[in-house]
Image 1 (cartoon, helix red, strand yellow):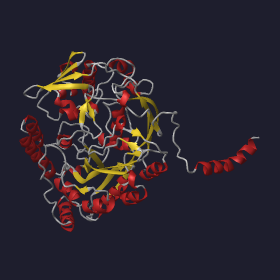
Image 2 (image 1 turned 30 degrees about the vertical axis):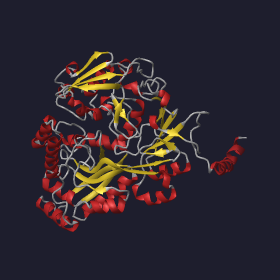
Image 3 (image 1 turned 90 degrees about the vertical axis):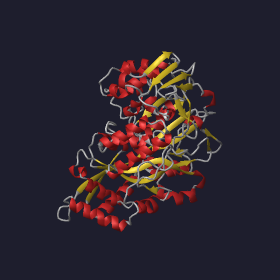
Image 4 (image 1 turned 180 degrees about the vertical axis):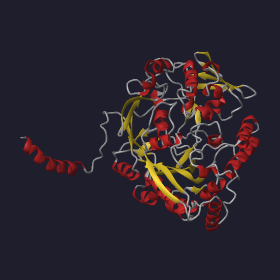
Length: 538
């Protein structure tokens, strides 16, 4: 029998393939339920809100957890775990009134103590959160993070089970934007202390958001289901969301077109014209609060400590060609770090040579490299590290060609997203190609990245006391217009130092089946599943 069964397998497989060719390969959805199949361009490395770093992690965690404020469908801050708040006249003390009756997914009440514990945890040196610096806005945050003060000294107090008081180091009119971020999320102390780092595993994970974690099959997908304990569960349409790892953008495109996936969080931008023809109602783009850039490891690569080398490499990048010919989805050349559309910012700063013709910039780049000692006989040799995303490879190959044109020898190494960013954080790279998406709508989310005490996310280890002083002065300036001017001076200082190489202002890109309702394009490109519904169709 075994021999004949083996002989029949190819024929049976062919018949099954023919029979299923026009049917999407979707996980079975229970009768009467609404299931949403979503393609993420990279697999999360963690679902711990205080250890997360990648945008893809934030997509999933934001469905599981909820902060004091949360994202509306358009990305703007609305009431989340807190229903109301007030601020002292000097802007230093914020009092949040928490939602009575809010519960963790295991039925335990969510209280102010959970928020205090979460803030203390993200600052714990043992956690080594890459985002700890965002919580430095709370009084004593830096001292706790650096191990110079106990966690109990942090300016976060539970006045009673449903009243949280935050005392700040300086006024922060953008605080309601910050409290949407995962670094400000509460965590269930009773679960974390029981399971330790393993609290985020399926079966242990306890959440306070609209969904709860069911399973995570590494390399395949994450399954979450509606959390009946969520305070607004009655208005959540979706019963289940599956997040599929889809690093190949073209494969993701085909899976959406076939109905296997309902949406993806990106598509290969140079295919936009084809997509608008083949599946026009699926294509979503929007100006993003994001900038793609090159980070130069000044700690580990001695030539990058020379301003002439950094400036030469920046001048030699043909941003116009990359955005107009390679990307083609509305991206714009970037000659500054803070993107247009960022709130509370005057703009007008930029790389001082930006208006020069590209041919002239190439001449200057060669001259600067020669002055630094790099010639045809002694070329600069560097490696670019990027993710396995096909578009990242296309763009890094263009940069490779630009740098070779001015005499630099360049190689490219690709890693999976989490691996690449771990290498950046560990300074195990020379040049890194990446994009920074705003954590909150304020220029500080970009400029704070290069502050000397930011830590791991200051990938190039930029350090300039004058820059730090300007950011500190902006923190203390209550007038929004004057604060914006100070931040602009800080950015110009950083750009004059060639602390990083801005490449392009990006656009959000998504493919969304027209039967999905509730998807609102927004500059932060977060689309929480609680706002989505599935209409009729395949």
